[in-house]
Image (cartoon, rainbow, N blue to C red; front, side, top):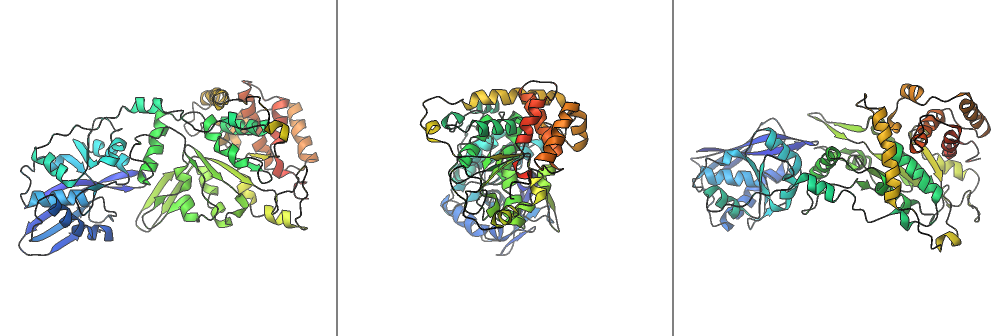
Length: 513
């Protein structure tokens, strides 16, 4: 008897329908075909034990299992449940097989028949709806994640016996229902950190506000203990809230990576990723035989924080250059090519030298001649070229540290950032590829960031006296445009340009002199 059930394979952030065909006939061997990996080949051992634990019998006949399309590699243990249901249906152990082809069925089986979580429940659920299936049966720990897709019946099951009872009609579980909009708006601003916790550092808070308002990349340079990491951790609290579309995009990536908890259904906070400096280039941008999302994709619509930037391997940093420009990463293999979104803000921090005290107002740098230059040269010019703001962080003095004055809350700063982003939304409304100032190409900079003769004279003077590089010119104009947006000014004024010039520390010839 031939029975078909349906599951899915995830490639990138999208899913593909997989048909599981099971035929039982004369003989006594089991065969799985359709390019299965080792986890699938081993599944029959788990399935046999799970079926017996549910009080049913594993057929002692020839079983042929085909995973179609047969020319696509199938990976993972999530096919255990659809294979088990197809075997039970083909061996007439289900009273009714009319419903098994109306549902997507996915789940890993334990030896006792319980269901373990799967990866990619959200994109699979989206595929089930678009393919016209009635519902989706999966482990209960993934059910809320899958249920944010409307017009699809989602049933969270704890074990194989519950799934069998469902298809036999002896149990009628309630489908899992998640109100996506309520879930989104109820948790959209639930951050633990707040800028009001930070004493002093008003100039750094201002730089982070500008970075958030224009989507600019930023690097913090300062001695150990100055608060670089603490400030960076609070950046997501002043970014504009995710809209519903961004939340769905972000949730899909984390779903595929298996990063969502059982209680989570929709990501409502902007992601904040902070990989260790020993990370490999593949872990950062993504890769593997079956390409998986890297840290830059997990930071999509959020912040990627690289602490102690010069300690990262140079090859790791260089692979970020193209994703920073394209805001996506394409991973190609011989048989397939997968594209992951990677629109993130890069925030980096570093000590100014190996000892950490170069340019310190009180302590003396003990680095030898040329050590500062060698340390800084670990970061390539093309990478620095993609970082708009270079900010020096100085230690907080005792008076500021012990002050009882309440600092500005993140919610107040965020409101200013949202107003600036609203201005940019209106400005770039006609261009679907532009959303904020940092994304402007040189041609757009010339058209939008126009300055008068006095402004040109100021930039010329800054480039000559401070030794600013030529690549700093466009960056200064883009940052100045963002500062003007925060001030709700239509024109870029001299004070906006002067502040933008201030944020180009690493372009100065004197920095490593």
